Length: 297
Length: 258
Image (tube, rainbow over the protein chains, first blue to last red):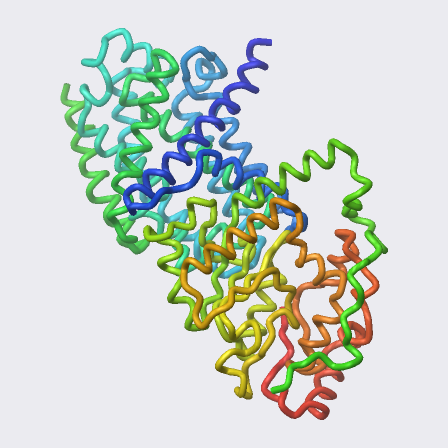
């Protein structure tokens, strides 16, 4: 019964937090550009509007199923996240399960886009999967380093270790190089500049999303809420001590997203090959150095 | 080019039978909705009015007035209006200026790809009466002859304030449930297709099955099918050849394949 309540509530809270993160993302961006920015309920308006479209184009069964994979992947991931006050499946699943599940949405998107037969979409998704290959390497190194430091892949255990030892045992203090490398990978995972070549509105018309209309686009907007939240929580769990209580936890998650949003506006776009080269050079290099330090301890 | 509608193409009256042959999701009559349905519709309209994605069709010179409208000087995002780059995601098709025969085809293709409710804004005098291109042989004069247009922005060219005013008017109309010009494309498809065929030839065809959509969504009206849509059913081959014989000016236009 408790598990059932958690399965319902955890994605719901993730979604609502995600709405705030999207709002923050758009407001901060507007402030940097000296604009007023969207009203408070803008993310809700967007999603309701998209779901209230009166006509709808589908490109076949695979296109429909991709939405199930997209949202299903993230909703499942929410249940495995260690958040304060909820047990969910965080104890049963572990870090590797979570990372595995977090790849499902992108692959789902790829399957769906493939059935659209739009060249912009195909280019976009090939770029997206290449970018995923790029940022997954430093992320994997950071995760390996973190599991070596904590001696476990159990997420609840990782959070407990950091909270019992106080701030001195937070991942960011015990393995700063891994935290930096991991953060750069996380910035790539958010898919914002300079790593947003696969969306590139001016060149390939939002790439994978080009054929997504109405309800499909609404599902993608919801996915964006989940994405910001999930990646933020993953980073907070590994390096920022997890959540002691909800206010502190949300501040940490928002901070992770905020730093990424705050730097994103000053960049242009890297080409796909440059994304791969940069990701495999700097974040991977820093993370590998961090891993060497962790192993030497 | 004279693009007055032909006499036989007089627009049918607006009162259409709702869901004439609709078998998909018929749109209920505004008067007979249940209270629950009315609340949901009002809520949806409320959200639609506050979240508008604009597809800018920027072949005309008026496009230069849009960057100030979007960016920090006037900031359209304050009222929930964001630029979008693909017709599939967009709600508003903003036509900035004149449309030549060639670009009008692209506009119609883009318009048919958009998902309803969708709105068209004609920007500048070129879309209203041809403007300074009135004597041109290759530009169309009235946008609303070819696709249903919600609002026009007068001026050559209109300033960002005028653009904002029209967008606010559109928001007001959507909120009140009045911005339903897009349904007119389904209900009077024969009228619009007839005018399109006059420019592009009888072989003109688009990948979108508008009549099928009209049936499916319950917007089928007495004006959906007629003498011009019959040409569609005859297929491109012979009709296209006929068109070349009958309308020499359309020799440059081909049949659009999906």
